[in-house]
Length: 109
DNA sequence: GTACTGACCAGAT
DNA sequence: CATCTGGCCAGTA
Image (cartoon, rainbow, N blue to C red; front, side, top):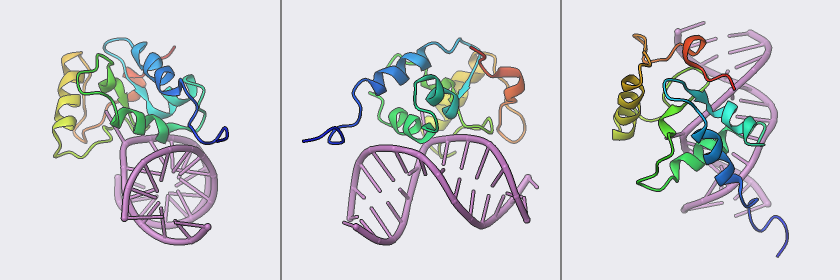
């Protein structure tokens, strides 16, 4: 048993908390969420945490996109469709390449 | 231990 | 625009 036996406790909750702060109609990137959660350079960890979210979670996971403004899920997945639909329902617009113009929709804390 | 794989990213080419 | 590279970090085989 040592300190590296477990990943730091509370990080997951911290990430959830940060995502919960993203206002409706805005998005944040994985890197942005990582930084705000005290995980600089931890974008991948954020992605992993999102992939492990419980099924009925109330966390607005759909408001997290990649640094290119795209949805980081397979286009043929139900999750992709769900994320895009939720964002569009909040007024977020996708361009012909399936990307959000972050200049317009990125959350600025 | 190595190797590979991801809901990632910035910079270089 | 497309690709590649190196960085990042966990989980899996």
